[in-house]
Image (cartoon, rainbow, N blue to C red; front, side, top):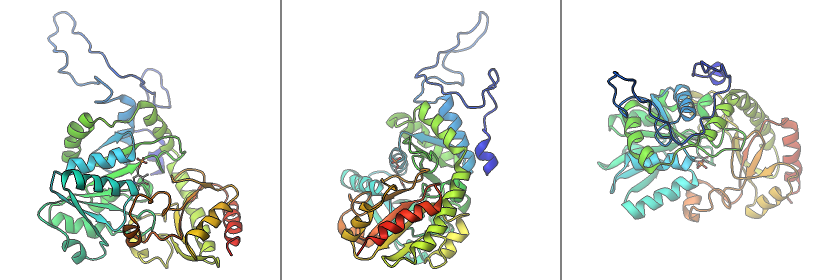
Length: 388
Ligand SMILES: *Cc1c(COP(=O)(O)O)cnc(C)c1O
């Protein structure tokens, strides 16, 4: 995997031998006129025409991600949410039904609410821990199963093999938002799932300088998505942003190795602090879904969630006492980021739903960076010590 990450699937540029893939910053490509006597029809040949339909830099990125996720092809989008909305609008029609993991990204939730109001597309949340719990929700109009694992921000794990087996028997496609793990840690298509989505803004980019989304899947569904939602809804990725991702991906492995190592060190210390109630990390042997996490993930990931004893006020006291760790809603960057889901990323979800998802007022989500773990711990500890 680390070799694949660094080496381009592309041949070196024949003419220039440039190691970095060039940025084709162009909207349009011209047609080559036929020489005298040649019988060719303009517009009927393969090749680039217009960058919304295809661009060499963007294609290089798409081929790379398809290879990493072991899919047929990839489509890139201007944001993770553009990717999520493209997949949902490609798979559903008015009146359809979606089954979701017990927690989903805040904006995916509000998007489903929008689709419910506008197209009468309904959805159910499901714990997905037993065959019965999933089969009990399947209806004739169920158009897809939409999973996040680990679930943001509670770090619950969904068994990809179990869900894909049940879905296959009912001919329902399984979509996995793989943002939290990246293909370095987890490859849902290998477990029989059908479509993988990424907010490439997070681990794939890794440096907090690009917003992007990616979708990988099998031949049939990707061809359908390309000619309908990608081309006509048009939420495409720019060549420069594709280039930033091509660059970021080269270091995905070394970044995640370091982030996971740091996360394990921090998890052990956080769980012993008197101000903390619970720590949620997939590779914590005490995690409810530890066995499933070990089966489908090669590392525990760079995100730890933990519950501060008390609630909102104690969580705020803690955040305000941090000296250099940045309070910010993104994740997967080289720098450590921390946030309070109830008032930040998941504030758009009604209180009752939030409580059902396990997003309490004391919950904190930590995206571990590549700094020295001792420095991260020093800052966390001194802020935790300030809680009365
Ligand atoms: C950030 C995120 C998204 C949305 O991606 P954007 O690039 O911000 O549009 C979707 N799913 C998950 C799990 C995310 O973390």
